[in-house]
Length: 115
Image (cartoon, rainbow, N blue to C red):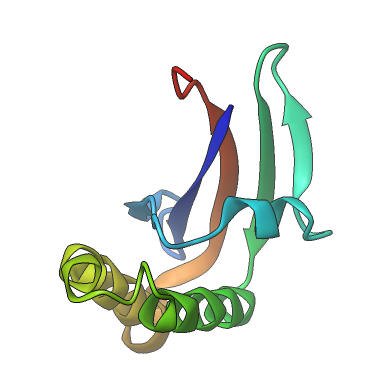
C-alpha cells in the first residue's frame, strides 16, 4: 500500500475548507509516527489524522519545504517547476492569509497503488 498526505485549511469564518491540496513532497511516513496524528481504520485502509494550528503547520511546512528544495530528487529543476505553485499556495496560506484560517486538518491516507 502507498500513503499520501492531504492538507485542508479550515476557514475561521465558515468552518469550511479554504485550501485543499496534496503536497507530494510531504513525507507520509514521517507524519505517521508523529504523536499528534491519530490512526483510524475503516476496515480496509489505515489513515492518520491531525488538526494542527497555524504554528504547527508552519513548522511542518518549513521542514518539508527545505527537504523538497535540497533533496537530490525533489531539488531538481523539473521537480521544482512541478511543485512551485503548490509551495507558493501553502506559503501564502501560512504567512500572508493566516487571519483567514482557524486551523489545518492533515490526513495521511492509504491508497491502493496497484502494486
